[in-house]
Image (tube, rainbow, N blue to C red; front, side, top):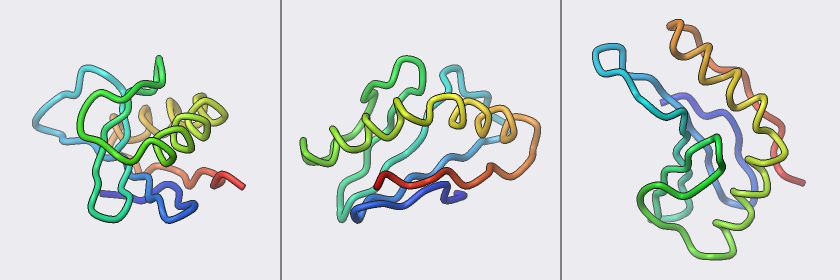
Length: 89
């Protein structure tokens, strides 16, 4: 699963499964032992959990980079590798 960003101990990954179409553009966030899935439009937690502070950081980052996330989603659906996205600073 390609890593597209990393900040404050949070790793953001996105992947496509060629044999199974995803219906909603989304990304996966990892923080320590926590894993969560966020939709891109709107930015929202759809599965899993991370601590509330990290969730707010992830959501803020995703709002800032929503267009880039959608672009990466499109690349993955074409079988291409997603581009890195600037971390939250």
